[in-house]
Image (tube, rainbow, N blue to C red):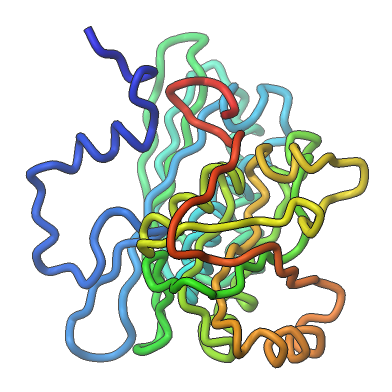
Length: 297
């Protein structure tokens, strides 16, 4: 009998989506967000995400930071499309023995994320889980992006420069609970840089770059020496740790020099680093996170 760990997360998603129609959607499953075009105004972005105790955070993690992460993951996906958050729905499933103060702290973190990044809490649901079971926080959201500004994973072309914002690696040390979604940066890359493809780095460059390249019908090459790393992190950590929530973006080569120069003025203190390019075929990286193989790589 074939099990989930035998096919991995990407293989499972591919199987589950068979037979479903994406009629009525401008962009269906497979990108950072679904895109709805009602024929007027901005495009609507739809996203859902969940974090699970002992998978995405440890039981002793500060509750407000867990709440921040739960909301910020969805906001980061809006940013990866060049969009902004508008409304979130939160479902909390937790053991009834959990202290009330923990739940209050969780929602303080959610509120802080929305106050920082935009959007409002529109509602949600609460549920119990069996005694001792891990907490689950699921966040569904709606965002928007101006017409002509949405950036998909699928628009990259051979020769495009591959770049990442910020630095990579070492998220497990606590950075995965306090990252900043790149909302302004994503909108800038969509509007000023002429980005052809973009996504946020959640499962690690080793998992996410091949996804972007595959969606664009391209291969890729990366220069490990050019990977921007947090202090003390190895190249392997920068490639495989995941939960960086920086943006991976493809930019036409002819525009790169101008984009790199303008970026420094728009976002001083945050790097935009060229790490390689899209190619016509090929490319391989080792590492990254897969839920069902329960390992990195």
